[in-house]
Image (cartoon, rainbow, N blue to C red; front, side, top):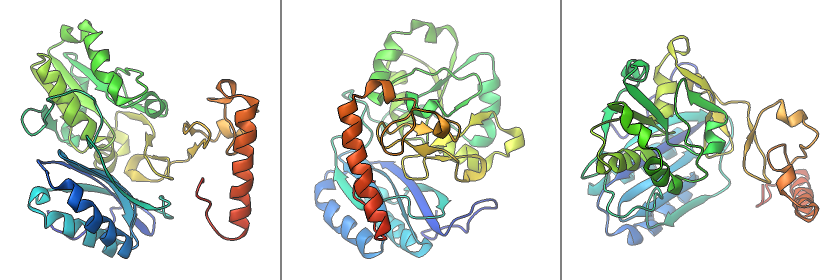
Length: 314
């Protein structure tokens, strides 16, 4: 892969480039790498979040094409990340508030010791071959994402574990012995990183034929024509776009800033929806004191907007 970004694909719009990336590598110097990486991103006007750990790097950043290309070139100049790949989409406005480079124990938190995707991992399946695999009656398809993500989109026929966090996934597998009833396990997630650990875990648990979607849902939505797609709905993304659809076009979901759940245009009309305060997902689980606190925050956000600023809590 070259250091330069490819030109926007047909159907993608937006003035800013959004680059999602991850790479598993033995990276003992991750702590000393944080400061120069963050300094470069800020100097180039790039915003987003990057996670660094002993096991590699993970995150999503946004900026101009030239700025993103410069950051990616810098990452690939490091011997540990020479073969780093990224997935790109477009945004009509900056989808992040600030730039953060964080040090972590894991770049994706599963909470299971001795899981190393560099040692063992499932078989990658290109998006063009994914439909055939998941249409095979001998295949169980598993969505490794969390419930608020699967709520707005899922592959046809996939099993939804209904997990709140990725940490719950190993226990879900162990509590579902029926997963052994079919020879093939096909797994997918947003960009591919969770499946690196999930498939490694499945192999460790004795499953032989374990596959995962290379590049995740994002790569599938980019490459597979909508008329051939087996994806239903939108894909949740962890930035202010909230969701993307086929061709990686920005979706029409909004985010409830009280519970962080994605909400549809129809849910915006629900009586329990109040911007920044509540929605139909969280209204009954919050107290009136909670909502009063959220209203105060929303009032400060509105004042900042009038001044042409963006409030830290938005």
